[in-house]
Image 1 (cartoon, helix red, strand yellow):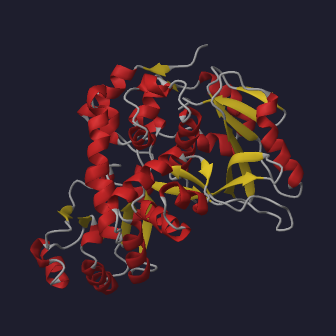
Image 2 (cartoon, one colour):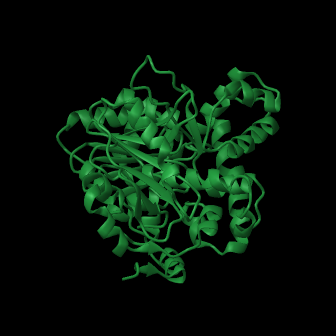
Length: 426
């Protein structure tokens, strides 16, 4: 029997016409039922506000702004909260950090009452630092990213939990499983932000141009002092060309004439506004010679395509970034699905001194789950050699069966311990 598919026209209609359920909705409700404060963090336009307001439609709602002290919230935070009793949604709380201390005082009066304050934040440094220090033990954090393929396709669970829990039964299930019906190139070119997924293709470049100016540069300016914004813009574009690669700060600096220290600081700024993420190198045995450099990814392939000046999905075909963008997107898929798990896994990459590598290692319950990502429709045993090399280098570790994410039509085993699975499985 062929796999079930969802027509792309139906996908776009659903996105434009109604709220789109998120994989983390149940987790959000669970956290709100057990903690006085829940903080949803993530980049601009990933859907944080929509998720909260749809999940808790009866809550009072306030959105803060960098240029306006709404109702004297920053000057008189206690009076502000007096006028807005819980349950309350506080949107973009990084623009009113004074409110956080007032929230703490309120929560401490009734610490057993759950779901009092739900907050969002788009600047990682300020939000995490302020809230973690002020609301330790009182707040739970939930990271939200753009749409996963499962969310676009209205699939409530996703394949990752099934793979982690029952890999031996996965093949039979996956052969009958649903597929995302859109093309690979359009998915990568549009990116995963809800608005970029839903709008007409003709205006997608305009969306990403405005996103860079309105959010990436604006939030970065608010987060840290950067003297030369032209160089910073060049730096952001350079990072998009280096997505899915190991990070060499000296090389980054030489590319645009800045010091390695400045390159490191600017990359931290991109991380701080959720536009960049890094996977640390795995080192289970300190005596082994392995790469110690982190591997970095631009947060959204749509923004990377904008920085690379790709005008259409067709422009991706044959482009040098195609494979790197595919890996970026698939790593993002695994991270998005893992956010709905009860305990968030730990992620690494691995590369030996001899060049053998594993793109992604997911560590959960003391077990390592290896993933290779290859832009191919004809996977072979050789493409799983990195996983076997890791197994031989770390024979005493608990290593699960491996997955090779690729463009294969149907899932199949390419070795005794590695399953090739379709990129568009939902």
